[in-house]
Image 1 (cartoon, one colour):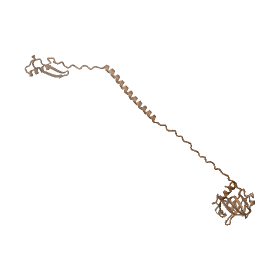
Image 2 (tube, one colour; image 1 turned 90 degrees about the vertical axis):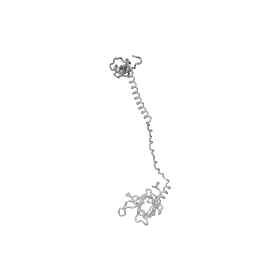
Image 3 (cartoon, one colour; image 1 turned 30 degrees about the horizontal axis):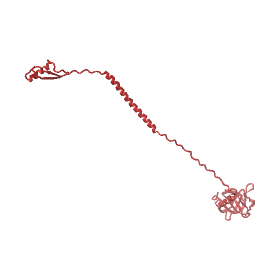
Image 4 (cartoon, helix red, strand yellow; image 1 turned 30 degrees about the vertical axis):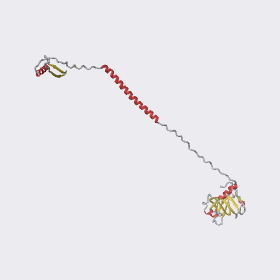
Length: 256
């Protein structure tokens, strides 16, 4: 083949890759050279000018790499799991510590016992006899026999001063004098006077004018000279003065 002869190639793709054929014959025209190249390509009478691509080497099983990578991966996963568990435990511990820190024990409350107030017992002061008598007589309300007879309940419990005339003396079942009936100038009935234990009836007589200081006692039931039961307005004598005989009963040591 001449040096300047045209050379044409034809290509075809198969399973082994691209095959290139060179025509070594001399052709006068380009068309002939091309036709010759196609014929050689079809009949495969010449060897390929360029070596065909080498077949891909078979896959190698990297046993050593698998042997190393798999344990390392397992270790990495293990560390990740341990880290997650550790973080969870730390969170739980932190939560517990936080809860413990924020738990406040309420201060103990001490209730003081209620103060007991003791009211001291009332003390009764005994005045000298003359002073006690003067104080009692000064507290008495002046009334008439008629007022006491007409409304005995109104004066019940009050300290009163009343004057009148002795009508009669009243004796108990033993015959001892215990009281007297007193009349007033405007009274429609007599006033019964319950004498104190210190009164001396032997120093008084019927018809005497007396002044009584005592406590209103409401009414007392008694019988008259005809045996009829009557209710009498009553006072309890504390002090007495007989203006007719000059006798006085001023012996009560502690008038009430």
